Length: 209
Ligand code: URA
Image (tube, rainbow, N blue to C red; front, top):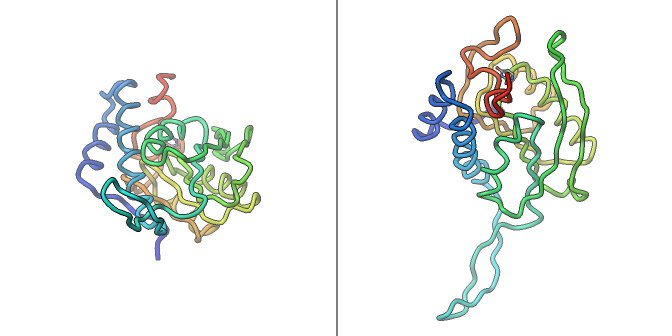
């Protein structure tokens, strides 16, 4: 079974098309990434376990369901992953946020770690990594390695676009995680960019280039 779930909701596909277009400016790109993250978070949390608690409505006592256990940490891979954090927090406001700093060496295309800061009970939480682009898969593999070394057992990844080579690479090392994505592209170009992709997600989010 594949570790990837491609979300095909019409609104997600529509919003991804807007992101892919080179005519979408940074301000709109940022807003649309947040909207997509909200819609994706709804799907990513679909199988969260529930427990019943006793409450009292203004009318009567009842048993009602809440999400059970210590819940979620959102872990953006800096910097592009930051663009999806606010959207996930809209759906899971009590989530803690850790940060993994990885940049891509543009010659070797391998990730280099420069920052790692997590909530102290990270191993008890379901971790949702946010990383808009899974190109070679290198940054996701590195982030998952770091989290597993800290005892994290339940890891989900939210991407906007993944490429087949990246997914194969992640799947080979971490077959126990789940990756959610809206776009699923076939290949990378000679500079390691997803093709057709949407360009450099960090540059488009933050208006750098
Ligand atoms: N990172 C990006 O932002 N875009 C790509 O296409 C690949 C890696």
